[in-house]
Image (cartoon, rainbow, N blue to C red):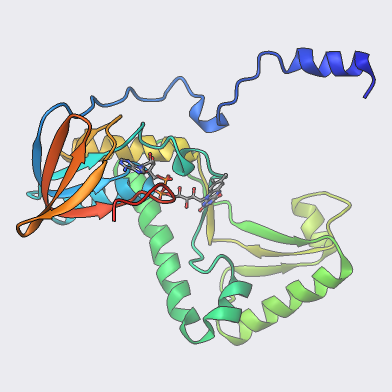
Length: 259
Ligand SMILES: Cc1cc2nc3c(=O)[nH]c(=O)nc-3n(C[C@H](O)[C@H](O)[C@H](O)COP(=O)(O)OP(=O)(O)OC[C@H]3O[C@@H](n4cnc5c(N)ncnc54)[C@H](O)[C@@H]3O)c2cc1C
């Protein structure tokens, strides 16, 4: 690149910050205070991403009398949950083709559970008034090469034979370009119901609020350091206090495990 062009690129990027788009939002909620003393609870959830937040929320919904604490080493939603692509897909197999290849015998059940899961997510978003731009857009797999047209057509045929093509529509070139007018698109398979788009950070923050409203005690900037068995329960130590819990649920994803 010519020096003048490089200077111009450097200038236009000079105010850019290395922050995930979704997390750079003035609506971001304040962090909950860190744990500063010992605690006790029925259920301790470690991790404030989707796994931890949904676990805490559902634990409270199932038994409002259950005493639930959640600890998060930074702020809820800062990690993968607040910075993902925002595709909220029903598929539990990362797409139908993968499901057909790996779990053909269980696929009908997996598809049914996945559809129910997405419905439940949508219902919870509505129930708690979570403003996360949830929209059932569906999703179109597109072919840009002739061999991909055949692969997609075959996939649609297989889905039909398995009775799993409900809500799935074959789009030839003209039908696809009526939806998305790109000259590179040759055909597409439209899953009309199985995918929603949402703002991932706002979902995490909304789940945090819903947990707090149901009485979950959340301590942010509180890392679980060590977990050990104590009597019939567990003890999790943090920098400024130990939490005794009857049960512990770990939602720590790729971070070092406490097990
Ligand atoms: C770039 C990217 C794009 C993606 N796009 C999509 C997509 O479009 N659709 C989709 O469905 N999925 C997508 N994913 C995957 C999805 O984001 C993750 O599967 C999901 O967010 C995982 O949630 P989690 O709660 O398990 O983990 P995380 O969100 O990683 O949360 C784990 C939390 O645990 C906390 N923690 C860890 N250890 C401790 C400890 N010892 N004490 C206290 N707290 C601790 C961490 O600080 C963190 O906040 C994407 C992921 C990435 C990275």
